[in-house]
Length: 427
Image 1 (cartoon, rainbow, N blue to C red):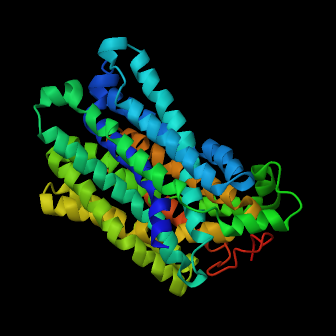
Image 2 (image 1 turned 180 degrees about the horizontal axis):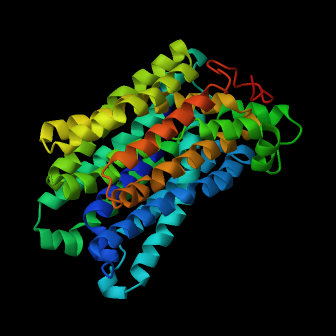
Image 3 (image 1 turned 90 degrees about the vertical axis):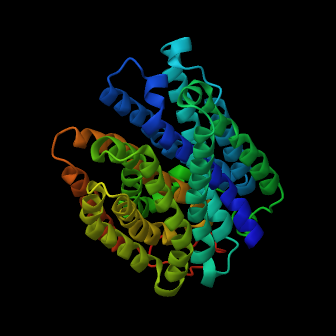
């Protein structure tokens, strides 16, 4: 299982390596490079909007690649998503800036974000299924949590590479060409990931399902929504808060800490680093907890934590004290999001039958991430109203309460037999 976990996590690590880089670049350098015609505030909103577009494309990608994963091959689909993601990240490092090609620079950036978002749409769900369908049922939560764990690992690598490159040259050189290096280095993760995934085996559960049924659904997403639409809607609404909380305290947080609180960019990046490091340590424990007490209780506890910690987290950050900024960022994200995302991969895989499992898991997960993708843009807009952080935390708290309400309506699926092609998606 260790080798399989490594293979499954490779694409997720690459995905979040890119999003970590783009989050830093959005908050710190992309505005003058790609959106210089705007004022500082408008340019920041434009870069955050471009960031969000990648997330909006992800549900569409989940339909496309979920179709491939459910009808053709789980393994082949994961290789394809990894390849597209890696190429897009690499090409960002080759893009001319606004100064060179004018409006075509931001347009090219937007197109790359959309294409990459399509590929990302199939990545997380496919990786979670690869592990869920082959893990021992009693430890399924633990093993699938490694898909979530590799997300902050990829981000940490991005932060490290970004910092090393930035600190190795002058500010002028970094803005002129140095910012490209971290994006170009993504090719190394791509090559290693493709080699590892090429050596994995097709899911035995999927192979058995293809042999058991007369014909797999011609259009898996249509089959999913027709027969399991209620579960899909409830699953989407049960996971609305953790993704916005993460991106508010990390991507938007970098801008907030530097411009509103007045701390240095180094402190802001360090705060995001602390958040991601905390997630790496906590996700596996949340997965193990879900194996013991169930998926629903674990995720409900995480959403409840987000309700409690959002205000204290911002109050700590607003002190401007470095240690308290780090503590506020940590408690604003790690305890709540880890409980949700540590249990979620196994829960989604267990909710849906094999013929539509890839489509169901990917579609639900990627649809819920839209709230995270638009969170920095919405947070920046709310902050501009002049009421401080209060509207931002109010939105997070409401979303968390909605999540708890809909989690209560879902069945407990811990340990469900995934080998049955017709396993029901309802209790």
